Length: 100
Length: 375
Image (cartoon, rainbow over all chains, first blue to last red; front, side, top):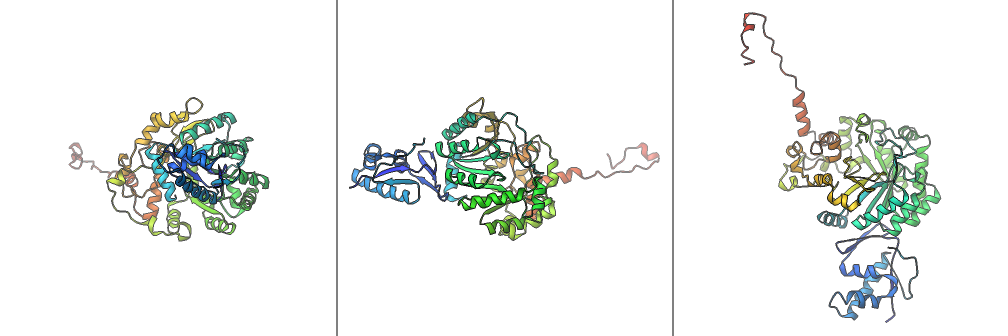
């Protein structure tokens, strides 16, 4: 499987509320919420860490899940979020200025 | 409010998180709107560093929706620096309120680049002589509309905000039509806010009861008139346990000087961010907690009013009338205009101004005896 890199889109508005992210798309102001697992993925999406490492280090340590299954779910989620302009995905590391 | 935002607001309320804050960056303005409640002076605005520090504190406190307003926000030379910090560094969802007359192509492009949720522009008429007569700045309508076009061409969301006054009451449909033609949204508010120093003389600029009544029955203005004009059933316990509004519950207001209030229209100072942490004021201010404790059933006059479940009563306007638990006369007038039924406050005032029946005691010997009528 090709490694996938994910990065938060700096153009979105985002805030954590009780462990869940509220995210407003910079493209069309649509509001999304991420559940606690998806929030972990979002927070770790620095563009430099491959998705499989994020799953291994952030998801599998928190939840009892099969790593392969979790990675497939995460890829699907990442592509869905990318289609809304919330995440950027690439097969190469994504280099840009990091925001808080 | 979208269903998701409503859910988030309910969660924020349960967790005592200030989800939305209006931050006025300045009270200075390049227009002199006749109905404005501000004094337009600079009494010591927060510096760029102070505002960035406040934005850090607000982000950490959970504030998500940040409305930057004034005064005219573009008069601050550091406006874009503040906006960029709020958006890119602290990821607020930012809404702007402006007269837009300083926005040209380059500013519109920069706003698009930074990303804002919406830009609300004050437009009082589609006719220059009326709009400029309210802003007291010649050419202001043209400049504001030019700006709206620049912003639209960047794909930004623009909202025209209009205030219904005697001076422009013939024009609100014209503003609405203009907004539709330009592909922007529009809002209309019949509320005039008293001056910050308590001076209520600006209220004379508002529309009279007959006009309000006509307004609430105009489908072109408010859509379906049946709902707002419906006579509501008596309030039940659940209605009476409801909050008066979001002020102090999920939202608050910060002035250019760092004073924190429950709302821009509720001038009850609860603390100052130059002296205390924002979150400490939000969580621990006695005044904020007093506002937060009030439910509709705690309002001595309004809780028994026919309109209690449907009234737009503003606690801030009530506070400016002298009692945050009292009625807001402007909202009583709106409820009366919508339904034709006087509010409990209006009825009480009528009772209190009824002249006493004058009893004429004849100038006879009987005058020496107590009148039976007076006994």
